Length: 473
Image (cartoon, rainbow, N blue to C red; front, side, top):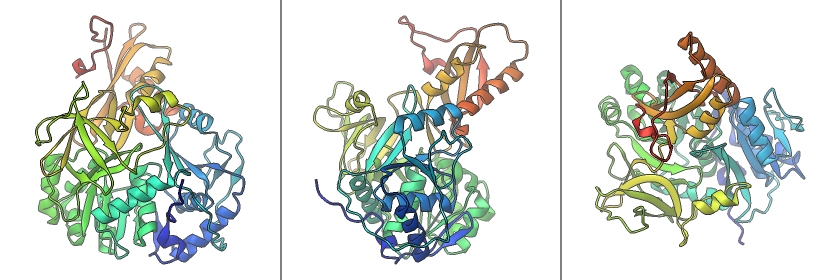
């Protein structure tokens, strides 16, 4: 066990540019002082929950907890009662820091005062000390807590700093949620490590991205839904012409969107690939070849390989597809309270099974072509497990059977569609569909609600009784 370098290098040196979150701005010195005040209030609190609203209070809460050596559990602000109950019960945090949801479940609270200032007091962090428990949806059941160490964070961020030639001269702009890898780890901790500026625009609309560009932003993060909307707003897209790098992730960027943005901005979007368990492992380099659907090459220290269903090597010829496996310093330390699930995703020789299917070109570039499971839905930049939505729907008294799938959507990438077998004849399908959508939204996060509910007499099954989701279209 070694000691890792300070994670937020520029912040702790008070050497970074200002940070703006939804209109509130703090200088590097002010942010460090406010975060240090939070850290000083957290002795004996090894694990804390943060209600990750897109606010400066959330940033100060997360940074303060990390400075104190605590493990942070970012809680999606749209969590339903059932999901919130699961996250808190599984992670067992000692207190809330910063904003608190209406249902705090009796946990103590440590407020965030943006005007507070305290001296920075460094703590020693070992390479296997946990920084985050990030909850991610699997293909079945409730979300699992992904354990991310300080060492993984530093390796992941440094790899992207090198790949994207990211420097203190850059100002990053985005409007992504602050509870997952893209928005929080890359989008907040990245600037605080490298010393560049940050502008979180709040809701990621084309006009707000354009305003950030006019104000001097050089680096932009977005998911395909965001870039699709910008491509449909040429008057705003034109403002991004002076940007240095446009980055897309969380799902494949459609070719028409890639092409349209190139026409409007003169820039080709750089795609990247990763997941909560691995952070970002593959990225299109700032000086690399860009092509729609191709997510780049492994970052420093990361290795990838393709295997078939029998574990044999798949040719890296740009056409042959196989199950993508990765290894390297950015990978997670396991699933919280789930040694069984942790063991399942590792090969005998130490590679992580991503569950995604990819091809690798001779020059090392990767293209993600699908998922080994049809139950992982990518919609609007979110990775959503069909299983937890199905479990929630089955809790409604009118639902006998159901299957949830992701169907192609030009805006969201995939839209969540629920196929429902009702227990009795439905007099008003539209009313019941709305009721079921509301039911899911109340129990789970709002972005997990079905966009469409289709009623059917039966679900297609194979001879073993398993639902054939590929036949649901």
